[in-house]
Length: 330
Ligand code: ADP
Ligand code: MG
Image (cartoon, rainbow, N blue to C red; front, side, top):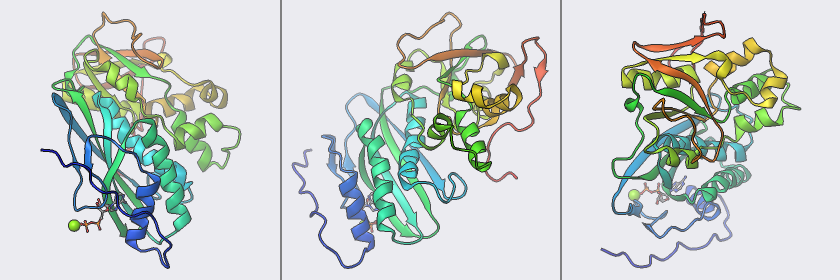
């Protein structure tokens, strides 16, 4: 069935007070991006969109709560960017191409400039990946932002956490530990001079192209949002395997290497969250990934058993106490 052309809602007009609906108009205008697979976008009770034939729909949601996931005084552009980035990162880990998003925004007050900047940060990343904002909800309360993203993979080709096999190599894209190092500097009020680390914390890059290229090559994948040990631990549990990592193989950025000694660095790389790199596993015969648009590094291998252990260069096990971020734990 065809819906034909649906008239666009009226343009923003001069208004006396910002109501909920004027806020929605503002967001819709600043995030406007047309896709031919969206028949009804923002403005009706629900959006109507159609996935391409032969594709599976991949859906993921993530919430950012002020004071939990970002400092209360964060730049609204950064919050807008990051709330979409963390969601797109989940699609990347599934090997999916993003298409649509919804946005549930809870705001303490109507701060027009804040919403404008927030929407611009969101829209900047959305346009990069041709994501259409097709709906959402706007409510009053403590600042909290929930995004749901929808993407496509060819039928049966989503990369799952459960596909890893004993003997597979463990790989990671990009570098690890930057965002945690940036957060550490922010807490110590020493963020000046560490632009790369702060950029990685506030404006993570979802590894969309890499994720898509890994479909059919990786046996399992996850994005590193809570910390490498915690996230690789999920692959291990769901695949029924254990992992052995080489501490000296973990890739670190020049900025991280310049700012931190090896112990602290290792802590950020193993337990720090928010990097949004992809950790994936692949057959040991596969020694390189020329298909990917970013560097990848082999960091360990899968063995029989459960859990993730880390070995130093001399083969001894490194005991890590803090293994990653988890809500509802102290
Ligand atoms: P309803 O009361 O039927 O749930 P709303 O008044 O909440 O509808 O929303 C009106 C329209 O605006 C809907 O299409 C909804 O998806 C969209 N919308 C509401 N808030 C947002 C938002 N923060 N971002 C994008 N779309 C939104
Ligand atoms: Mg309704």
